[in-house]
Amino acid sequence: MVDVSTWSLVVVAVLGVLAVALGVAVFVVDSMARATFALLGSFLAVAGILLVFDLVYLAVVTALMMTIEMAVMAVFMIMFMMNPAGLMPMSMVHNQRGSAGVGVVTFVVLVIGIWTVDWPPRTGALPEDSTRQLGEAIMGSHMLVMLVIGIALFGTILAGTVLATARGRYDRFGPDLSAARPSDPVEGGMGR
Amino acid sequence: MSDVLAATSTSAEAWGLVPAVLVVITAGLVLALVVAAVDSAVVTGRGLGTAAEPLRSGSRLLLEERRTTLAPDRLLWRVGGGVVPVAALLSLAVVPFGGRTLWSTSADLVWFNAMEALLWAAVWIVGWGPNSLHSLVGGYRFLAQGLAYELPLMFSLIGVGVAAGSLRTTDIVVAQSDLWFVVTMPVGFVVFVTSAAAFAFWGPFAAPAGGDIAGGVTSELSGPDRLLLQLGRAVFLGAAAAMAVALFLGGDSGPWLPGFAWYVLKTAAVIVALISWGRRLPVLRPDRTVEVAWIVLVPVTLLQTLIVAVLAVTGFYG
Image (cartoon, rainbow over all chains, first blue to last red; front, side, top):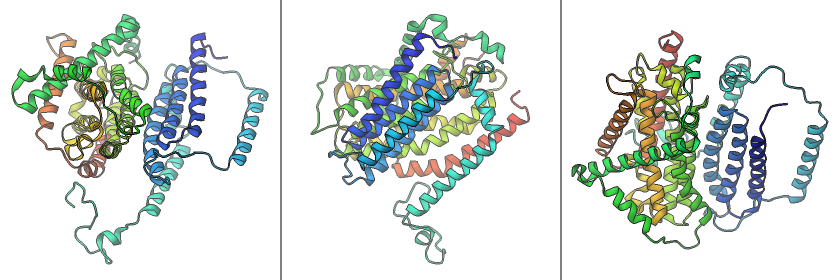
């Protein structure tokens, strides 16, 4: 077992309850902005739990990525909603019966797994610097996986942008791509 | 390097948690006051005679009555307004004052960056909260600006981490004992300070609070709420200046004077240079600042990181 003090256990329990409560709040509140930032609060509570476990890099990077992600998500979710202002009442719940079924099954599977799997005891000691260990794993033995995931994510971003944008290079540079300066609705700051 | 690690304890361990936290809060408030005073002196052009003006207007805001708007999202509005100064103060927790940080982690640089990200989510909430058009436009402007300047800032931080071989700010200061990082990373230094100005939406980056949208995110703020936001911006600018000293200007190293004096002098110099240079530029349209970040700063900082990485592999940084 990992040696954790009572205080750490209390903090982990409180943060865990907070994470779940804020996760529930996502589906209870009636505003997209509140739902988004309730979800962010839930992620930040998880980051706090990682911090208690002394996994500082994972904790801080979770807080960093999730904050950026939720802030960007707020923009898109509000943009694609039926009422763009988002202050009118709305609901995050759809297909209630189906999702309740999926939720219950997942919960049961996870609980059975947690209590029946014969978890291996820790071998070796806590590393002095978990950040360095993580970096060595990512840049060493798991390099291939990380590279493939990185390229796949980047490809997805490019594909998504290409599919979403209404204007391509022919709109910007003319039918034979011969315009010296692109015609853009917003000029930008580089004098192009 | 590990001997050095063992020798430096955090200020929380050295002075006790409560005094150390109080020191960081005091440092944050002093930094904010210096930033506001220098800003006021530069903008009015009347020298240090106006340096007390921020104190006066700050205490006036403290006593001012709050106004509100029709059907605001009060919960989010208040939370956002509170997070701005708190995140700015939290970013100071990893800045090494007197050779010690409030708490030292193996990922200090990422911590600083995360607090910055929290800041920009919070500013958007402040724009969203009052249910008001100009305020919301300001919030969206800030989000676009924050997104654009996040990457250049990350790349300039990555350069520092690669050169020092550590993400711990005290290690980074030690790694500069021979050569300040600003010598090999001038671009990183400039981009770091510029991005800090963008995150504090100050100077040429003030469009989210611009006059063309009646004050943007600040348009509906009054009394203590406005004070908290302005305080958070000033604390963050000051914290970024202090962080820039630790990351690029050798921290507290320097001849004759004690280290702490050097740290204070360098931080003051960065603040004065940033403000007197930044206030020469007009407030720029956000679509301009954002495109500059994506098209110029991202490639330039990537190139800078490449140079640093090659230098680090060849053993230049020891």
